[in-house]
Length: 345
Image (cartoon, rainbow, N blue to C red; front, side, top):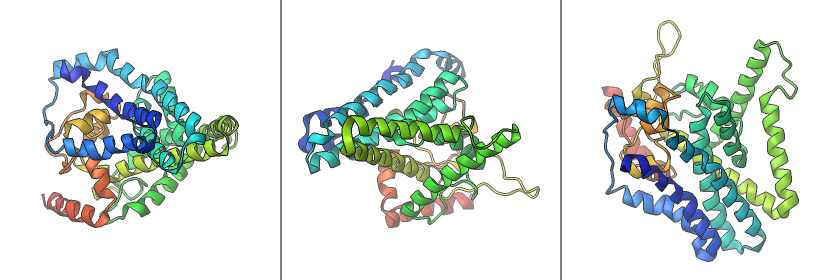
């Protein structure tokens, strides 16, 4: 029973953000406190388990629509809270604006981009459309192209803009990742169009369509909520994107695939992603923390992702790791010795 209904706890992320925005004052930071104070603290005690589902159970779980609808419901939740936030921005004082932007931005990165990431790997056109809708508030719709056609092929190599090198400072990584992902997405779409003998310039170019949709989204916000609403929407988008790129940073930090004598890289293996079995982070991020299995088979649904004994394990859950990454000296001290041990094995 717990394994099925535990993912309802993921809705605590939007619930705390909404509650804080509604009540105002210092409480606008409730979403931040829940995500990066309470969750890291609780994960000191709830470290989770490496156990996997039995193969027979996997077949049943894979086909249960219940798990899909849990993802779909994030669309009205995200847009409902975003609209409520924007409807109040002109009434916020400085403190409330900062707290609400941070809490809503975390929501854009988790309820938005993270769920979009899961749905973007599905084969259904409807679910892929849902993925793009969830990426819109982050103004990061090109992630759908780059992640699926780029990252999953180049992960763990210097060709991948979101595979962090050992010793790379996260603040410089942010710039490299954001710029690199956009350029990579454009080049991937360009290659596809040229392969199909189509012009790069035109509405058949999905990158161009994405930009038009995003500009239309921002224009609608400006008309409805003014310049303050527009700036607030840009701010929450930036927070969401930085949350994504910080997750990218910790997922593959320092892990590299070897180049074979034939010039190709070795296949993506469980050892090329950092994982965490900490239960709460797994629930809040729909099992994103079991990242090795996701790269092994990207169409594998979140509810049946597996633990691998030979995948590198983070010493903490993802919420705590995100905070640690923002302090480069402590991050390097904690992670680099683990990298050395992995490289010696």
